[in-house]
Image (cartoon, rainbow, N blue to C red; front, top):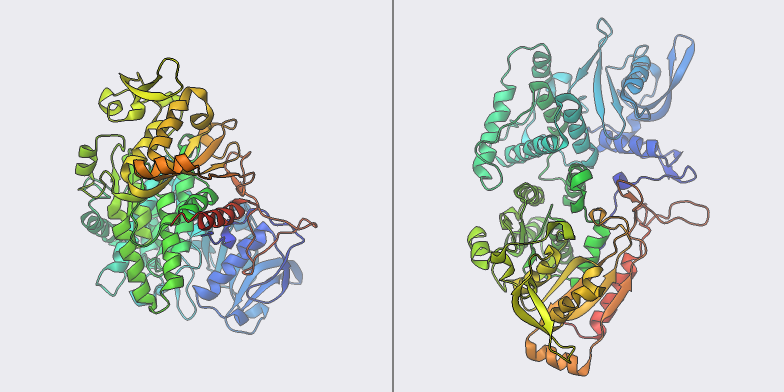
Length: 621
């Protein structure tokens, strides 16, 4: 399953690429600034309800007899596109907030426009044009077509629209809190997640009126320091969140935002229906703030999604198969596996209507996706991510996956047991700095013991002596195999030293004794930032088989699929990995049938070749 790339993921736009403007049909150069304009044009039409015939771009603004510049987007009161009929002016090309607002206000002053918007893709400001001192004031949003400023926030659930894009919305909320609250990024991240949950719980409530809302009148009172019911309304919703998601939130959790920040975020989210927003739109947005949260010291949890797609596509999980990630981080492998199975449902169950298909998909997520992470914060992030996909969060637990199975079964309420998984996918913590030294843990593992050779023989066998310490990635190989049923298969990210260093030849011996080696796919240097730029990693694919079957295979010999990926679609030299796209001989982006750029990666070719290998060798999955 290849992830669909959406326009908000672009980061390189050669000026020679031309596109058709969304609202006007004019031909424009495809630049980073143009992407922002196209995005907001779509919002105006699909979320605010304005007709394309009401919108123009590069409209000349005049002050007296002088032209002061073309406005990026102008919305007119109707289809008459004249200077005296302007309703909204939008400035999208100024990246700097102060510069952009100054420009916007200079455009608004001589016009009849009631409202203005400044948007740079990551921050947004809405302005009311007052025509008298103080002339301009910030507001929570601009009205939809046919509404007034007083109507904003007085929404019924039926009025909410699915978002065409949420990445910039979530980023806007994140950036506003970061700039105005003085929190560290981790705390900002947690506050944003709380509000996303509050929004979803409100949408799912029986009340036809929205409680997750902020009106212009309430915003004005908050700015003036006057009392409103707004804060209490949101706090009451959060109490409901804590009751309904007691496994995600502690009863002592609190919202830590000032009223103005809380009002701003609610203002950004209130017009959308997150429930009805497409799962890939929600997933892209959530992934964005997760990765922002995980940069720097926490960047080790970033698994590039082409690698997620590679592992999932090669193992090909199916309905009825339990998928487990024992080091699930922010649920990247689990979500990718879920999307893979859901995509197959859509292709195979053409007899189902949209609601019936969704029920089938949610049933799979709840019953067949399981994850464990030692870090309780990351386990909570995984739960939240699954809720955003409509559920599956109950299968995520916080525990040390290397603990005894008795402890794991108790923590997971029997959901995760020895030999309970059909597919295991994981990117475990690795490196020599964090060796496992607990004898209670090491004694559970064959690979927690030293291996020896008989005199005069190269045959390795496990001794009764424990290592003083063992690196966790090696123990995770064994633990994944222990989690698998016979016939089950796994993919694990490992440093190449685990596979080709003579010191670890006992690891290969253990693997051969317990499983069939399906494939080894070498990854480029620096694919995983925590490993360091000079550490090579690979994906190891195994299938757990009974001893008799393994002996038969080894006796007759069997093929192993080998591949080396040179490009995963990211520039790994940058601090934050940057997407790379295919270009033609003229340096222009190569677009697919949906006008989306195509990643510069050889991952699809590896997936295709392994599918042939799987079929030719009757692997049965």
